[in-house]
Image (cartoon, rainbow, N blue to C red; front, side):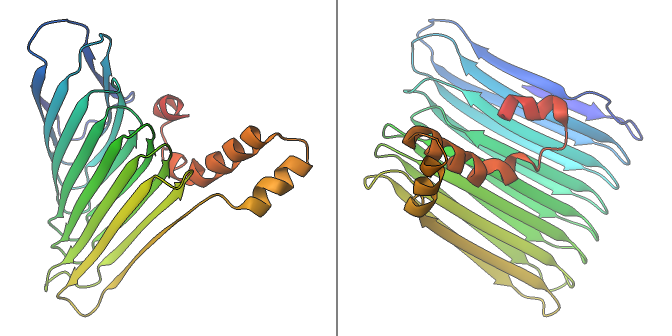
Amino acid sequence: GLLLYVKKGYKCQKPLIIYNIFNSNDENNFFNQKLILNVEENSEIDVLVYSINLNSNAIFLNNSNFFLVEKFGLLKLFHLNELGKKDINYNFTQAKVMESANFENFILTYSSSFFKNEIECELKNNHSSGFINGAIFASDNQHHEIKTNINHIGENTKSYQKIKSVLNKNSKAVFQGKIFVDQNAQKTNGYQLSKAILLDENSEFDSKPELEIYADDVKCSHGSTSGSLDENSIFYLMSRGLNEFQAKKLLIKGFLIDTIETITNEDIKKYFL
């Protein structure tokens, strides 16, 4: 595992990229990894965790992450996997966010037969914030899940979640998101949205948005929609010279683009385009 500190007042000029490269045909294909990162007061860092399996053997990748973002700190975390069709990946993240600090997490998942990303984010002190965005591409019987639990503990805290899924060929995606607001977390602002496009009748999208609120001066909302591509939009694009495949590809890109645009670091954004 890795234990990393970003010292007080230090702002990293370039993103830190952590590569997990699996290229051994060893019989032991179960990997446990831990990442602990402490972003100290008034510090900033962007971290990309990039996992890739280069051999034909299936692996089970079990990741455990703990992040502490101290006062006025900023942590932007990105996950990108290029694993095999038989691989399994479970990723658990705990983040504690202190006063006026910010934690951002972006997830792109399109590989491995089973993927689950579970995030627990605790907004401990006043004016802390947490943002979770992501996209799921699943096909060929893949099963992908994202589960979030945002706990608003301090006052004037803010959270924003947006997950979009595109599913095809008997695949399944699950999004379970919970916003918890403590009785002392007045003036909380929480937002959550999940959307999915199903490209065939055999794919499935399950969504379970939750709100648990014990304060009275809050602004919280959640929503979830799923459906197929609009046939009228496909027809319109085809009437302008595109073939059916190009028309669907353009509509899917338009559906996902606002999640990608949340990535402000151009060096990292190129990995997700």
